[in-house]
Image 1 (spheres, rainbow, N blue to C red):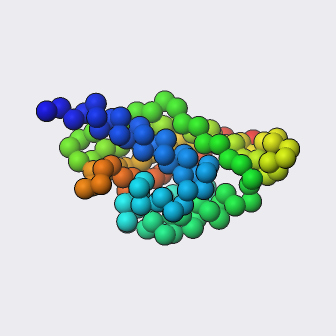
Image 2 (image 1 turned 135 degrees about the horizontal axis):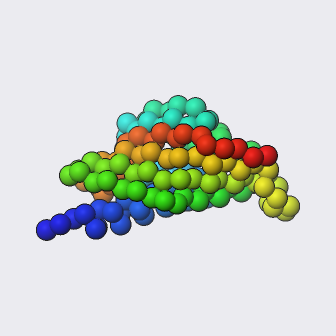
Length: 135
C-alpha cells in the first residue's frame, strides 16, 4: 500500500503544529513534534535535544505578546521512514497585545529532516536560513 499521500498529510500537519507550538507557546507538546535528539539552528541560536529546543523557543519568543508563523511553498520528499520538508516562513512579532502593531517581521527558509517513529512523524533537525528582516 502506498503511504506517500498519508505521509505527506501527516508531515504537513506536523509543520502546522510546529508553528502553533511557537505561536501558542505549547512547549509542553515538544515531544509530539520533535525527536528526543532533535537539533535546531536558527537566528536565535543552536539547540540540541527537546528540552533545549523548548527553552530556546521560549527564550526567543518570551518578550513578545504575540507571534504569528506562516509557512508556505511546502515541499515534501519522502524516502521510506525519512523525509525532508522545505518551506518559506514569514514570522511576525508583536510586543503589546493591546496595541497589536508588528515590531518585527522576518522571512526565512525552513529545512526540516523528519523521521517516522512509533508515534508518527517527528522532526529531527531544523535548519533556518534568514532571507530578510523588517523592523
